[in-house]
Image (tube, rainbow, N blue to C red; front, top):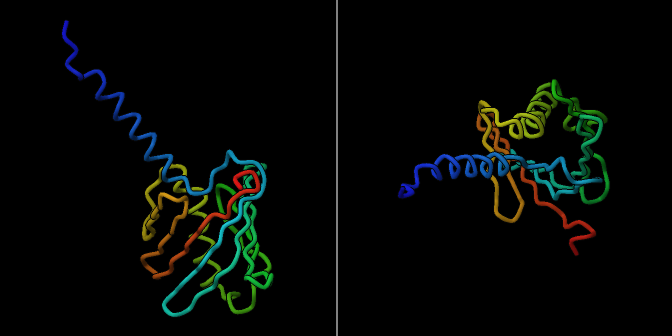
Length: 153
């Protein structure tokens, strides 16, 4: 019997779906230790840049963003149900800013890896491991560029 290729088509679709879902997982949970990203949060002409350090443990994400001088912008804890900002720098410590950043981080850390459709947010992945989350409603862009790990050098 001649192989018509119909059997391999579903297998190829499953493989492609697996690759696409893997590409939508920006922060890998399988790496040990803290992951570091050069991060820029921009809204119009305003920009906050610095280092974002994140770690996944005990079924939650914990992280800190600080600028290039080591001044902390905020800490966060994100579990499946919610994300909370802690120790927020005064210029960002407004309820509407906190709520937006909390929702954006939660969707980035929990919704995209689960394959959920996220309203008013768009995730763009680059081939070099960098990625961007764009809040299309508030016009805020979060850019993340990974630092090389000590073992990668």
